Length: 74
Image (cartoon, rainbow, N blue to C red; front, side):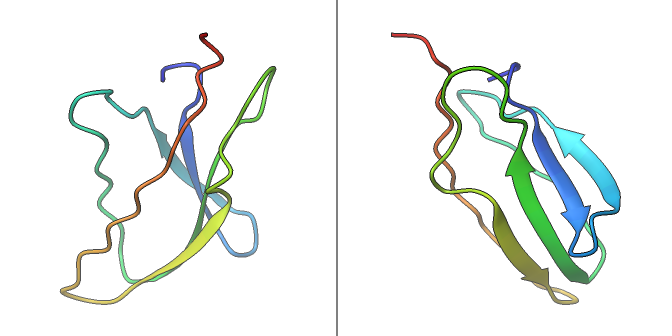
């Protein structure tokens, strides 16, 4: 999972931040209201068929985004 950091950008491509998912507890990111693109870096083998994904955050709302990350380990 550490090899696949989750990247958050604006729709225009401005980098907001990144987070590494924990295999047991997942990930959590605090964002201000707005529209964001969630993706992972795509080096090497694998990736995620779930991403990139555009999400919209509204004030007082929690958004859940479950994704599958291919670690490349077989």
